[in-house]
Length: 303
Image 1 (tube, rainbow, N blue to C red):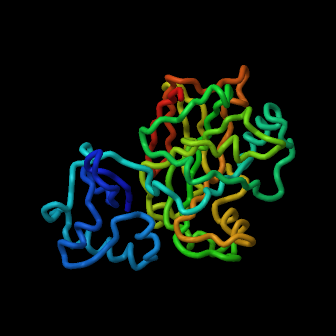
Image 2: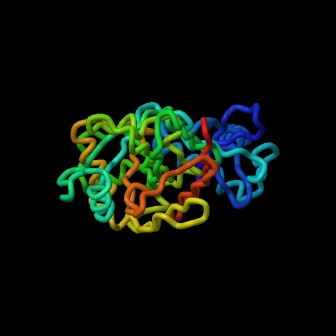
Image 3: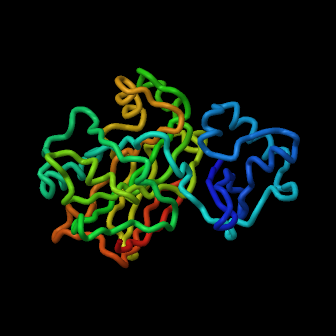
């Protein structure tokens, strides 16, 4: 399933929907039409665990595209929001997780040239998250080195504490696209959270594709363009630490909970690593795409 959070009008509350062809089927309204109850938000659905997805799948199959009145709306008529508009906790970011990105970072950002022996973990506050089409803020008082990073995001579906590498993917609810926007000149004594944690630095969407539709997250092409020019193009098979290894490593010391988000790292091609270096500026348009999930498009605006 392709799950979205959407608004039908600018004044409506956020709603949970399923992409079905050219329509968005409202989860709560679909359930109500059959005398059942399902939630109106992504986090509430994730909290239900596998039983929530099974119930939703059953209702979708029962209608077979003949949606009850009020249950579906043309996709072109809705505004997509970030799938989880306000995460409960900081996003887990993973640094230096592709071989060539390690090399370019060591040249341009003074990071270690050796491959990391353990995942490099940082975090991005919930306030970084913006949905499809929303602007990436360029605050010239804070940064002149605004950079891009396309990433596969993994969303946790159930409580994970000290899980094994072999079982880790069973804890994934689904996958999405994230841009880890970074102000390279805002690193402080080697700490990354201010560089990566400013408002709008976590574009996220356009949907969450449930894990059953992506059984192997290590076979996905991903790419990013700026103003239509390809800057990053790679495949998740090149990750140093695979999604299951990241989940096992984080959960060894920090409990992962339903709705937690792991941004799994970026491949080579970031602006800092280019010669000469390139930085985002107001007026630019950034598009990030992950195979089987979709793309998000964001303008860069001065604030």
